[in-house]
Length: 251
Image (cartoon, one colour):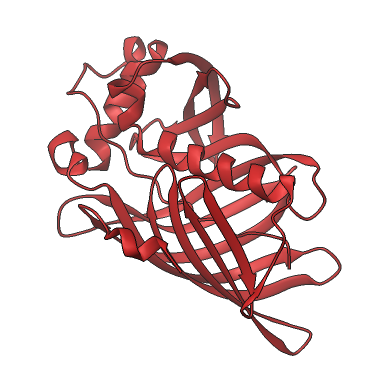
């Protein structure tokens, strides 16, 4: 088992409000600022640095087609992740455990260590950076990012405005925000398929949200596509925490 399922958990926090309208759409940072208000507001969102989630759905595996899965995830972007993924493959139950703690990475299937190929390491690093960017906070609090508009597209039949995030040594990521709600509805980037080492275009589409008791919009339904083909779909339940203990990310 060499594929690694990684979560789509999108939280945003940065600067205050800007005027709505065409001017905001032409300014990529202003688009992100609008999104922060829609996701729950800077003060509320900035408190939470960690996420715990559970999910279930279907994942497409080469040669096997669609396989049902369940998962449990703990993460503190950009470099701490623990994921337990349970699947049934050819009648056999398989549990895949992924641990990332800084530069330390490990992958096990039913307790047996899996060699970390360059493709797997690259996919894990890409996922960590994607989670960091999707929070939006680092984009305004750290130097080294560049932003540009990528035009308007339709996501799930609704118009969305795109912002490209660029940084030295990292692959570009396109973030798309619903024009009406200003919620983040799609993330697009190039990454590596860990099963074969080939680069693919990955689209993560957030199909549904719900607002929690803190007023934060939580993604609850996600579709992931590789080169335009469905890779996985999942229903997700998540809670946001101020932090997680370091022991969470150790064996």
